[in-house]
Length: 480
Ligand SMILES: Cc1cc2nc3c(=O)[nH]c(=O)nc-3n(C[C@H](O)[C@H](O)[C@H](O)COP(=O)(O)O)c2cc1C
Image (spheres, rainbow, N blue to C red):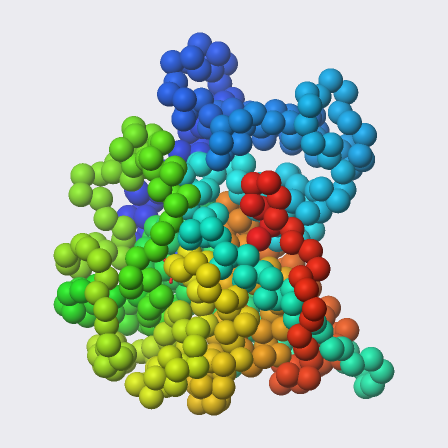
């Protein structure tokens, strides 16, 4: 049952700092108030002002969220030339290639040409600590890079002449339900950090396009509120607690709300070295008033999915494979294991009753020096031997990536950061456009390859390429 009550809960906790900063930036009292603001607040106001100026088409001064350094951003509309801006300080000269490689500050979702255009806007809209949280990879970002490089090293093998493919069928079946597309939205924590619409905004966009969505256990909003926004129950991702009763209560709660599939994340049981997040917490972390105002604005605040299911905080313990059965028995839901990257684990997962596996390295946020997931996929598919669906995420940024993953045996293909960039930039409409872009790219590749259905996409559709053609990332690490 979807409870109306939950929505009121969410609204109470979802007060937006962004709106406050916008209001302050637009106020005539700003000049008086500004000197008295903390440096962090001054930076936020600077960023809002800079965005407003850029929307009006003037070159604008930006402050880097990561290092605090001021730099010149090209103006949006008239910018598409390599001519230096009159009066601009020494700055990189903007030209179309720079913009293409690093994204541009667009004014509306419809202006986006690819998913990275949303990254730039989301960065400009987001508090530095929250940006660092989504942007980071562990250690030296090697796994993040590997995720992209893996797709780039895989080449397409299109067929040319043959029967016409006037109508493409992109639908796929998962656990008895037919989805319009193989694309899904990965579980990402705390989406209200990126937009006040949070998970519900993503849910509305995903539902409208027939896209599956997995809610994070660390979501900003409750299961019921998201399902209500979506208009149907969705999948739920679990971080298992050391206390079985906590897990049992959580599972019973989402099962009672109609959740059909539980996704158990098992790639973060030993900790992760999140240096970028630690750095930003060190300088302006949770102990600062700005951060405290949203994380601790209510005494004893807990994220919705942890309320009423009290249990000890602390490290996630090692679990054994028998836990899969325990989770299944507790909720009578299908259980998918998220984080499988080897053949051996794939075999064990199926042996112990997993209904599906999700090949994921958490978007490079769990361990450094892993292969890209597209490189892990073939051995996982070999281990599963067609007995359960194999899903994949991490580093998917293009429709061609979806095609490549399907060719190597995936049933469904997920994105994490890209839809959150869309959300952070424009809320639901941004997510909608991210989905649209990915699916348009995907169907174009399908048409080019003369594949009318997903079943026609197979190992013959791809082959190993030589080297990555182009890494998009710029000085700030955008474009991954
Ligand atoms: C900001 C952020 C928060 C995330 N939170 C969760 C989470 O709560 N649970 C989870 O299983 N995975 C989480 N992930 C991992 C995603 O589910 C997914 O595996 C990953 O984002 C895919 O890689 P991509 O971002 O390169 O598309 C998170 C990822 C990001 C970027």
